[in-house]
Structures are given as structure tokens and as C-alpha cells.
Image 1 (cartoon, rainbow, N blue to C red):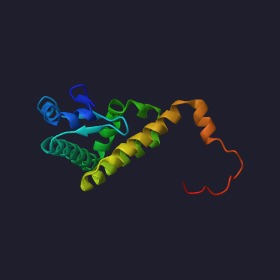
Image 2: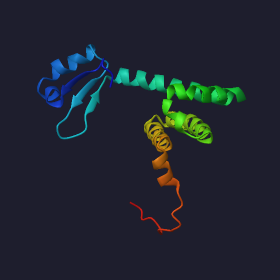
Image 3: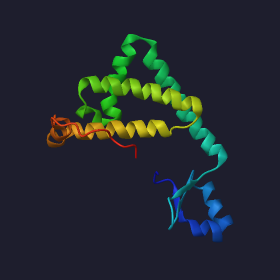
Length: 155
């Protein structure tokens, strides 16, 4: 959450709901801290719709740009390290795979109005970059142990 957002304890919303909700006039979102659960974010329906419109527009523009011309993908590959500095640790073929997956996932997520898959995909690729950034960890995870440990049970 950005510094522009107000934060209060959930109990303030329950006990002083009018005063607490009035804070939404000063801040686009209200972070509600909870003792017994995950924090919540409160915003107006209009603000949530605006945010979704912006994300949708960015997703559509990125998707259209990447598919427009052959040079567009190269442009995307050039700007990825600026947007996601950790891509510098990925091998070159993985950077391209990340770019393609990013565009495709953003487009698909926009079509259903749920960006959770984009966040999950970004986190997974960032963790992959973290592995590649550590030679000891990379070696441990990629070496052939010469042993088949058998089938893995479903969690």
C-alpha cells in the first residue's frame, strides 16, 4: 500500500464507523489492520472500478504492442530489466519466455477481471531469478543426483 493510504485498526471501523469511513474522502483506500486475520483494504466501488479500468487498459495496450510487429517484442525485452530489475539474473531464453508469459497472462487475467494469476506468475518468475542469482543454490537445484526418488504425492 502506498503512503497516501490511511490505516486504522478494524475495531475503529466497527466502533466509529462514520468517522472511519469519512477518511475515505482524504485517502483512496483505507487499510484495516486486524488482530485475528489478514489486513483488509476498504475503498469505494468507484475507485475500485477506476483501478480495474487502468489495469485493463495497461494489459490491453501491452498485449497489442507485443503482438503488433516483430520489433515490438524486442522493445518489450529491452524494457523488462527496467520494470523488473531481477530479470537480469534469468538466462536469455527465460527472459523471452517470461515476456511471452507476462503478456499472455495479463491478457487472460483481464478477460476474467481477476489479476491473481498475474501476481502469482510474477512471483514465480522472481523466485526463479533469485535461484539463478545464487550460484550455490542454482548448482544444488540443478545437479543430477543420479537417483530417482519415486513419485511425488499430491499435497
